[in-house]
Length: 311
Image (cartoon, rainbow, N blue to C red; front, side, top):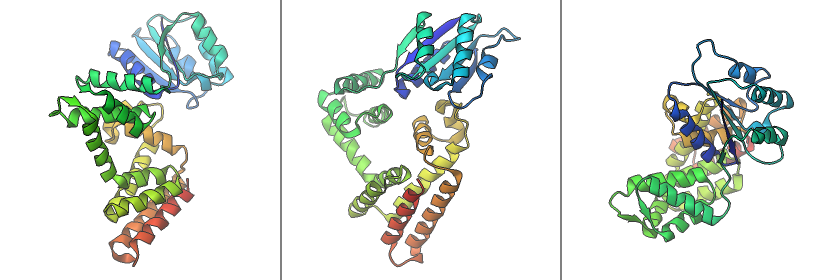
């Protein structure tokens, strides 16, 4: 039996580690499970002997949130493991599920650290490694500029690095000036800043972003388009099983994995009814902007207030 323990709360690092494990044996049968999304017996079924004797990889995410009965299922399997099974367990850290975690550690699993990067030095090392992986050079000033602008969200940092690396092939080294141009591009897409704040329920932030967007020349139609696009993404992702990895859903949903992960985080605040109400509010604002109302700005503000009231 193979046993791997991913330990730490950084989901990007955990996802990458799991993907790397799955690539080792493309012929293996893969089962992925996330705590809170399955019932008692599911773990035992996934780990039970196979009739066909094929290699299997069973991934259980967020075992810190497993209930007592499900933790017992994992513990029972660890006492009598099956040949040909690679069991991958992700514990996000903290005191929850500590008893199971200690049992796993006693078995000397392959341990992969997935700690949240809190210090600027750790984030800087992560950014440098990302650029190195893509075969690009980056200046110290550019690294710090990315940290200052994007903070601690590793997925956003990784996405920014990928975009910079692909969009700046003519630049031998990515320096602070290149990052500044990239940031200017982000400012120009301020309609999406309005949408992000509104979808998250941050009314004040969304209204301020709306005013900033309009003051810098963003067409109101682009703002309703961004709002509608964000709601469509939520609707698409809401119909997909949370047990399926974002990388596996990307093709069928027509969305990049990071966008699926972002939508999944946002969906925690939404229900089908509130989502439908938000879609109607944006549709009304869009009609108002295109001639149905005298004051399109007031219509946009009303739509944002309606959306954030539902979150």
